Length: 439
Image 1 (cartoon, rainbow, N blue to C red):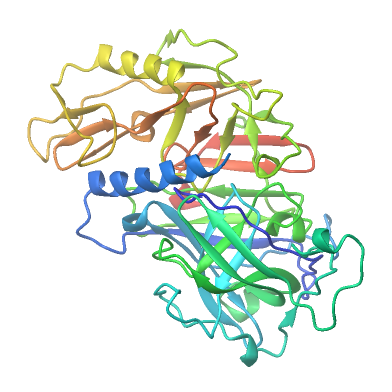
Image 2: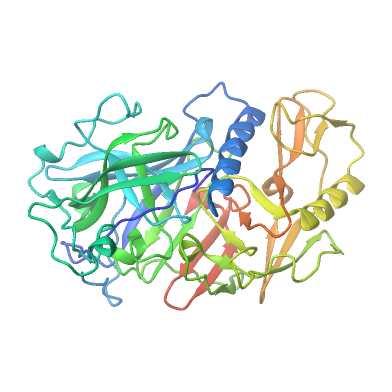
């Protein structure tokens, strides 16, 4: 998730009441503050990314034969750190709310009334479980309950309600675990109602979730929305950061597919069994090239260690890609060797390490070659706009360094205009360049 360190829990075996086999979610990039500059956006996103990174180590299945899809809106929340906000609805009658779509966590939660002084302002009305005919408290001994382990098989006390307290790198949330019906899709003919989804009903939280009313985890864990729906696979296509109006799409289920000659595939690396690493989608990145030049990076630089450290994950909830320092310094040096503009200190305005001063605030950046990420069995080619960012006369490398041995993250800025498919059952990531605004 873009710059949020979210872990998530969600769940119960959910069934699409309509019999639909796929969930379709529209992804729209919207600048909620038209006056924010690109450097300011990157600075705020990077701040949240770093908090997120620092925190990480401290039903019925969808019928594969049915291709029905439904839609829901999502927007790109640029001023608040680069999160992608999907719109969904909770309860009966359904109440819509925006939530951060995050492949780096498993939990679904939203703020619930009553919510006192320890709640944050949100753009949508608070969900009130007392006003919904389909809300239920998740039993403490449910296999999906965060309290089940503490019970160790013993019967729960009468009226037991499982309270949770989830901490993230950028904040925290606390409340009770519940079960509800979630609705995807805005038009009546295009909706799917999914009963029995376990979620966090938050009655207290930090103020670090601006622009949303909660989170939706899309991680590998059993509590994620992907696992709850038994989706098998999901895909998304993220529109360019400069595009403030277009809608792209998140698909969950059999309708999520990639076809064509440009599709490349790489296997997921088996995740460690220990949480939170068990949630992440690890990839085997073996090298990086800038133009025709292969950089001097050890093939083991991004290896996942036996103790669960290292490795590289793909994360829709993190904005700026981080690379272990040994690899980052090679990328940085390669960019420097090609750019003749004067460098400028962008640490205050952008938080990024390598920035250049353009001749004027409206000057176009110079041409740069594409960057190629060499994954196991598949090369991903990034145009300059996906690894450099410009604004207000500053042009920067949109990547940052990570302590050697720490986990690297492939963020959503580098994923823009790339159609990406997560095949959970086949343990495979596939991708192809695309104009996401037209999909």
